[in-house]
Length: 299
Image (cartoon, rainbow, N blue to C red; front, side):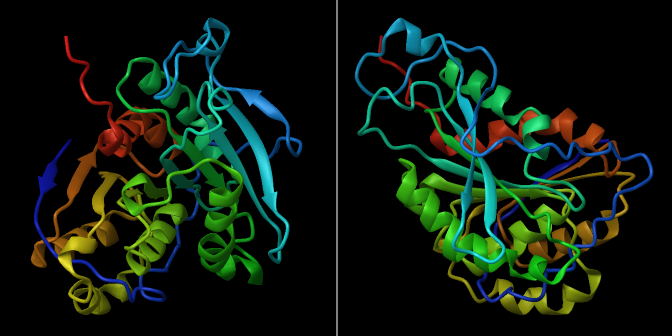
């Protein structure tokens, strides 16, 4: 079953504690996560690709290689904030080129490699190769501390340490139009909280089977009205028709609709598993890069 709704509306920034029910437990048919993490500073090839970059002409050996994955860490936070970063093909060719950046947050009980295993680097290579998007960076933050005290501080580490570190150490475009956030399950709940609390930082927000507490509903209407319409990020939400979070997602979607908030809502067949997310990851990526698409080449 599939349904898409696009509507107009209003947004907000005071959502710090209300959408954060990040419950998203792993159902019995969930795919068991891979716990292996890459060695620090190691590079891992994504997928073979052949693509141009928006800079000076690139040599053939550069164009023939895929983007790379690196593991990095912000050591100044407690605990240190680990992350994997995807750098597009030919990133090192032009030292002046800067790139849009997408932050993707993983689900509860998983680690920073979840989106990588779901195929995001491969899809990024394909989008760039086929000139469906300008080259872009993807950051996969780690939220492994969800079940201990440090877990509640992820949002603060993300905003006040991770984003500044990435902007300082990698060649990102730092305006909101070139920065997006998304997450699945618990990561979707974090994306709601972080994205709505900081609408000045993100031009788009993707919620994939988001974990949102029903008890937060009474606050949503008030907070949505608090943010000027011009600060609204583009918003996507999808969920499976057999998902344990479906009732809460539908309630959230209803609140968005009542407030005429422009958004896309997709109800698909499926449940709260990696099988569901991997089936839609290509569609997710197409949506994220829509605002970074290359201008058509004049004939």
